[in-house]
Image (cartoon, rainbow, N blue to C red; front, side, top):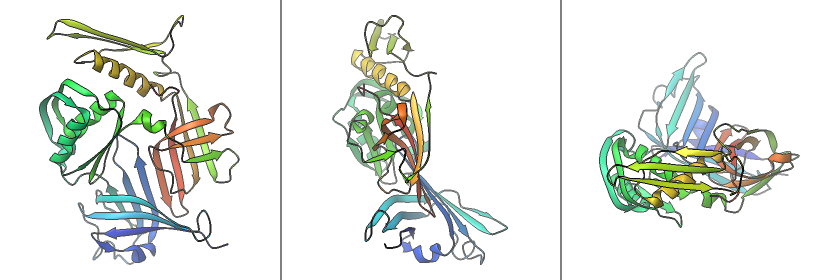
Length: 339
């Protein structure tokens, strides 16, 4: 049996520093988020000879590309790669003694206006995809819109908020996930991704399972339906919509929504998306396994022989660490029916 290896490849400002870095690397952490937060990495580097604080120092705003490479990890002769992506140096730190450099990177567009510049705009008669395309082009980003659904908005106001915050809120209200990298703006319908085939299976007795925890809660989740009611001052009309998972219950738990919507179709979409967003928090889990390059945020896995917690789970966050290569997952149990 050949020796298993897992190591970091890193290209900094176009220069491959893998070999030099490997001699001093203490730890590497890559956090892959499905939605809502940018991916990030953190490296701890020993600097006994003080080369990383002087001639080889890291500067804010520099770019670097990171990959986790495995050899003979799952079977002899197999080489696998986990591309972490391109990152911007965010917070370089230096601590002593002993001398240690911490390199923190975040995967965000080079144009920071996307995150911070507040805008006012009224979007009229526009689809989500067209809206996202307009925003993406403003920052030189490529739009990856992966859904069979494409809701239309009669009237959507962007009131003194940055494009990133505005688009995140719109996607959340519609049940979509939004992820932004250095070059891409990614939007997908979460329920469609939950319905996809699982990419891995873990049993409680597997030696690859290093630890796990499960939690189920009743607070602000586990609703039987959602009810929306909004008074539109312009038309002097009340827009109402009720969505129930099961009819005929004696005392159903109904989540009430009072939020601006432009029409009945938007009310229906918001009610369903809100119910889904709350109910997916009912059963959550964390699991740590031997490092696995297959495990990425937004994919699904099967957990078996975990009693009542067994089932299909969606990966909200995957954290990969070196040395030793371990993968920790934050999950939620896939909802029946998807909504």
